[in-house]
Length: 70
Image (cartoon, rainbow, N blue to C red; front, side):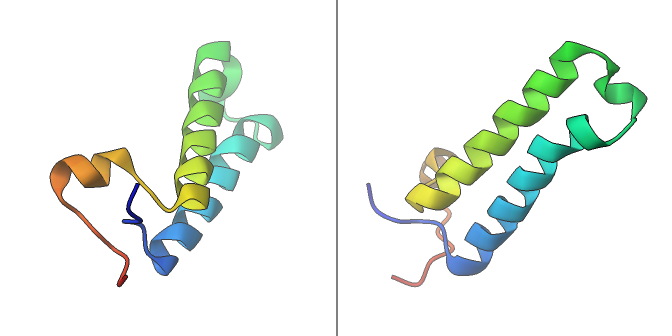
């Protein structure tokens, strides 16, 4: 796997991933009253953190996007 996620993109993915993981548990939003929305938010957050850690995004590969300079 060739890296296709750059530094700024990685930081944004980590921050957004952490927010999505924490939001259902610390907010009182009605959206997260159902378990489905909570599970979706946590899974998307984990995927964002995983793609950031691996520096590879499969969707970027499909669409030919590359945010890293290497």
